[in-house]
Image (cartoon, rainbow, N blue to C red; front, side):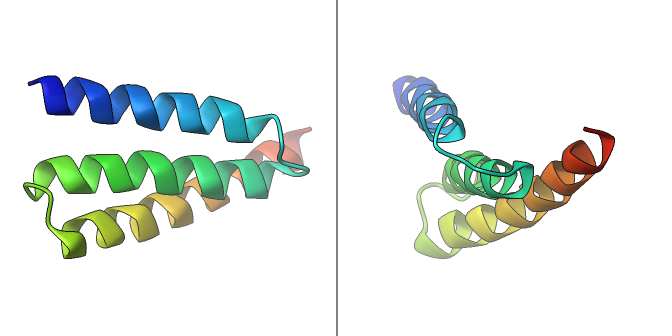
Length: 74
């Protein structure tokens, strides 16, 4: 349980920290999605490398698409 809380807290802190550095919605979405996806993938797969990398890739893709939509609305 402590690992899960730490992973989620780390993902949120990294996402918030990196969002201030991003120049576009796509960049912020991709980085934030990759961080959160990697943390979730790691947790669901028991810490396996494949699960972490797969989660980061999926999260980055979803975050990029959400960032594109956000930019279009703005």
